[in-house]
Image 1 (cartoon, helix red, strand yellow):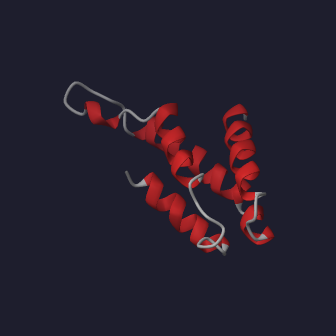
Image 2: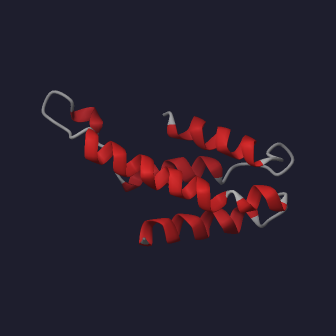
Length: 92
């Protein structure tokens, strides 16, 4: 899918700059999880006049990856730490 390709390219480019290879290998799974989360939210939480806050769009996905692109290889040394960062960024 195009969305996965775009975010994978961006994240992979960031992780290629000094991160442990195991962390970089986690990028496709993190991106897939993010896209799957976005699809699940869109499918299950339709915005209504009362629940307008259920809108989750491409801008929100961008914010998730923007936060991940601020990660430093000194502090994110394992795939688990990157997954935890993704979970934290997705929780906003």
